[in-house]
Length: 353
Image 1 (tube, one colour):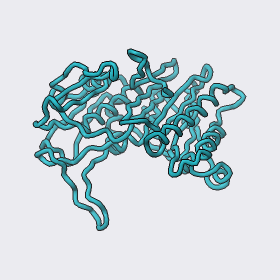
Image 2 (cartoon, helix red, strand yellow):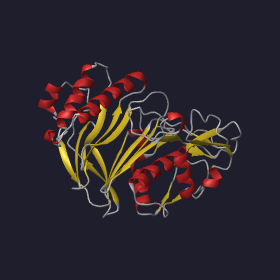
Image 3 (cartoon, helix red, strand yellow):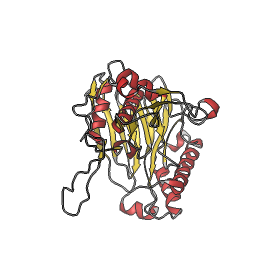
């Protein structure tokens, strides 16, 4: 309800939302894992030059996380509904407002990490502040590289009351310069921490023994930042990306993405990340049959058809959508398997043209 996504048949929201201006591009994606969520993003026009934005990830899942997300969204939208130029572009007061609301609810162990700010892409400046989310992922078009910038550390909202924050670890704002082609890429940990099961050649789950005494065995592999970096740099340079899996059940399996037909946009970067994450979790178990179904967002499916060179090996049994009223924007395939989506996938790209 709160995320600015396109609306499909029957008034159901789809997975993407975008806005283009002469100076820039905003493109977001949201794919829930299961149940209600604490993930949230938004972007909204303030005046002729400025756009407000936010990306938020509430700790935990279920109704308490969703309730906190709703409160964050309400404060954000109310603040900017009443915004005028006299308020200026300092977003720190807004962050204190959000912290006060979240902290006052008294949900033990619940907090909301977020990045928010105002983008003025005409001037090439983004004013950014954060709470518990200090890493900024910035694609430098000149260097053709995804780089990380660290902001001053401070806690997520809801952890401490405002008076304590102001004396210990106050919220701070920075200005990020943006050149033509540069992209600020925001995503929640569901992207970097997406994971798949390690598998033996017979496709059974493989457990890696503990590396140190006291540690547990490992049976999962996470997506990780290095893959994210390779995907983003590959698609924005119209190059290629080779997906490699640890303990893949298919010996010497080649999973190659050719991005030469993609435009170097924020939309391409986001769709590439989601598309590769999907293949990261899928596996062509020869025992898969009619009862094994995978649903794929139509936009991601189209992107995979265009870029994934082994597409026909994975998506060779399409079936009619069995639940078009509930999932109007998805394609369905059988005879293929996937590991469960661990967390929500929430991404927002802001690009200067």
